[in-house]
Image (cartoon, rainbow, N blue to C red):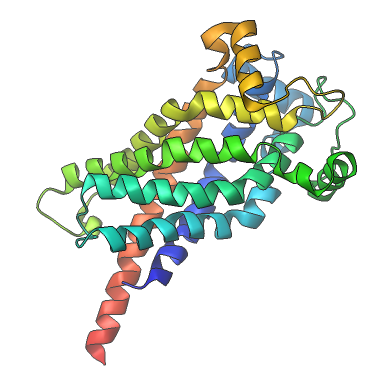
Length: 293
């Protein structure tokens, strides 16, 4: 199998996951950063009623522009590291998938930090908590950040974004591989599995990984919109965590988790199977081509 196969498969997977999951992500960010909504369904209804259905796709251009690169790195690095540390990539050891997933998360976090900063700011633009925030598009948000904080401002929340990925990515791939191997039994060909098995494996692993890292994601979102329309509230990641916990308790660190879990299942049910099947098909095609020659 070529290392390129992992990068191509990652690009396909990323596009599939983004299209399915972005509306849920918009609801998640709004619930994380404001008290204007009572819950998932209430937020959906208000956003659609007040801003139209298209508002649920606010901020999608930034991650869409980088989705091929980010997921090519995410899945490509995972595949490459897994090949280096495990002799049987078709049925790898679970600990190998955890190590490879953590390595991919480190690099993916570096790429996704700035794009998530832009995405989060667009997703909350127009709300009463940020009435003066830029509303038109990515470039306006970037200019606003640079004018206030310089180029370094685009790295706001980068550290906590990387921390989120390190916590969740190894767990994410390990759970997915464990479920796949359980369903697959003695078979080594993932295309032998039914669509239901692939969807279930991707959806469950996505939901569980988000459950593990959700409090970190709440802090990340708070930090990334902090200072959009006034003075900053948080001096650091630790300060944000302490203040949020003091104000709202442990429940505050899980505000919006229902939207995230609703999003995690369909997104990862689309993304991980798309990656696995594309990778399997590319590998088969490459092997058949070699045999032909």
